[in-house]
Image 1: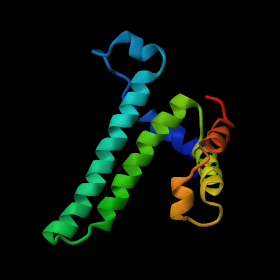
Image 2: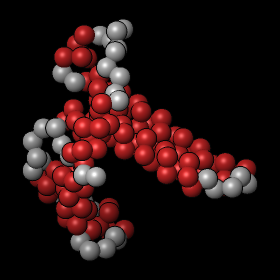
Image 3: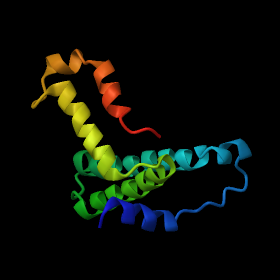
Image 4: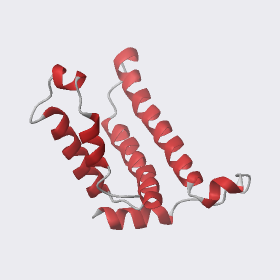
Length: 129
């Protein structure tokens, strides 16, 4: 499956019935981005909770649940991608380009602390939203 198909299929299951939402938030796509952001945070929290239960409470590491939470994060990312008009591949490519500009071929503490934010921003701005 490619990201275009995934985003199309994922957004088909999106609820758009936000009756109590401020209309200002619905006009510029902010409600969808807020929904995606809150959802990403929630699913990331559920991912961390599963790790917490394993590390601190001795529960078996539930890899199926971890993968399910990652899938849920993809769903919320699909909503954000659709609203911003970007695809996963483009985000992945720009992210790797940014990381290569930051670290070269390998992470170093020195390069992490002395980043060229201007170059990184130029890379990220290659696609307009």
